[in-house]
Length: 431
Image (cartoon, rainbow, N blue to C red; front, side):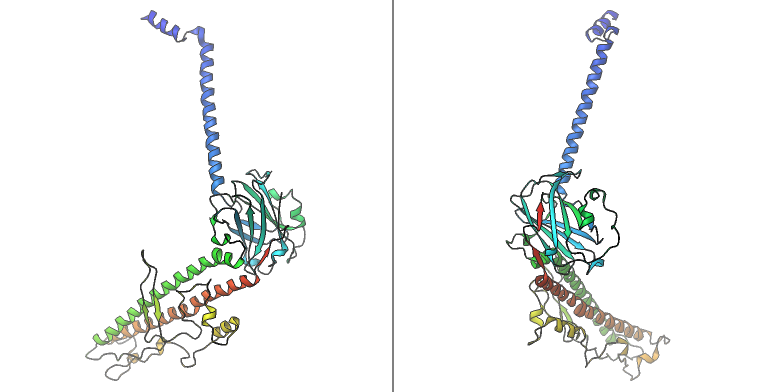
């Protein structure tokens, strides 16, 4: 057996005379394994970087101008269906209101290719562009038009405001590290963004498909539509709340004819005109159908509205249809509405309702101290609270929610009339 073992050891080169050779083999295996792991890691890292590049459309979600120190955010990067046009939508913070120009001609943009190490590269496609300012809303954007679908590439976009409306003493704020070597950020009021319009993370915007840049259409789709939907959902909730409170009132009305103390009942009080005859018709939304809820009411708060908001939209407009004949200024109309009063019904206070009993006495005179009359007092208190709750929800619906829809329309009209586009040859310079 010893001879056999020696024979196998000799064949496998396990003897002491082959130690150096064995070391070389083991070292080679380790080196090969390490190389394979390194290659695998590099391939995986490259794939991850490509995936991240493919998904990430925006690398700088906020900005601060270099000289006037106005801050803002970047709402997103949007593209058309063919992915040959992109919009970078920005918004100044509300604290900057009145501190920036609302004329697109006063802005200029510069675009170049970049990488994750912020090294400048040539752009992958030929790009032209324009600048949009959406009136006084605080929103502005840069439109990029490419001669071919955008490729996967990080782009460095610099915005310059050539009109400074705020004076800042001194050299200004501390610049970002990647901006310190660029003297133009000290000389001009600028900010820089890093974007990738070729990324899958961009959002498609139908209004970018039109040949002409329409600030109002873009503003409606990208800003107003979402706000309008939130208001409409809130109004549906208010309608459901009003229906529930009206059901409570009906329940308490039934108790008045059923509950008595020693044969004495409540004489049903006069229903306040602000509530009398109100019903909520239709059905709430479900998986198969949209909501059809609607308030049917004879009384409308003089500061409120009662038009069919569900069948229209802010984009189509409500004002022209609801303004009185001969009224030409919606500003005057809305101002008069906000100051209107109901002269016939100057106010509403559920506690002022009269509560008489069938024996001719006044239920309010019993107060909270009479245990015998407690069942009737509870009905009075519950009904009074229900009327008060309903009135608050109804006025919030007719006055506040309707007004919010009209305010969106006014804002959209403002963008339509005062929005500006800078499409000059030097609006966007590429390098």
